[in-house]
Image (cartoon, rainbow, N blue to C red; front, side, top):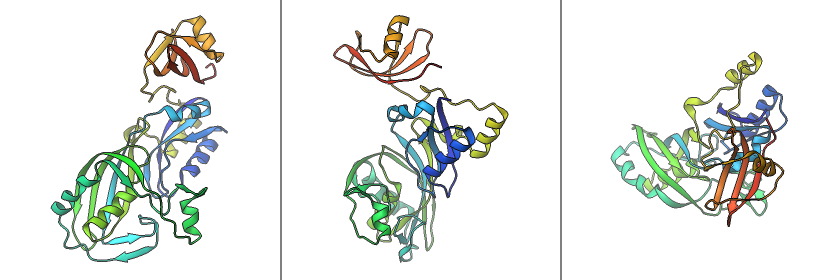
Length: 289
């Protein structure tokens, strides 16, 4: 089996748990995922099946989320999974005030990842250090936030803001929630998160574990084609050159430099190649299907 699965991750499972469950349902050993989701988060978790795991680095990087931010509350994890650090009333907050604060989180910004995150510091994951009681400040990282749209506002003691966020890789929505609360002086934490887009896969097209299991049992499950979400230009090779590409040989090509999807003349996807100075170098060669 070779291809991708657009999985609708349920709450309460780690991304690693999801990979293990897909292995059991599909009867595969080689399974990987793109873009980790926190256990409390739901939504799109791209899953690569078989040799398609080698294509994960070439999928689109942009992501989109639907998030609920709760004001008047801060936690150790910057979401509801952590211990409460502080509580106060956010009854005075108005949507207009919150809306005026959002533009500072747009564009190329420096962001401090949550203390409980998979970022490595001195060879250890931050969440491991945090669980050991070590107070380590996560290094700032530059991330890209393309758009933030307000979807709903509910005022009250613990006012809540629902937003849609489009961003680049490495962006922590938990950090946006935490930092927005700091700017507004009430504190805030992430109350809910659904990923609606990742690696070119959309939530509307995702499969639950239940649907996946039913399709596998019925013999109707068909992985998405390996090139389904790839955005690189397509290069078609005639039979002789296609064979040489599959052997891992470099090929002269009169094309602009860059990463390419490589297909044969029957449009069979062969893998990924990179053209440098007129020479096509195989980067990923897939087994014949």
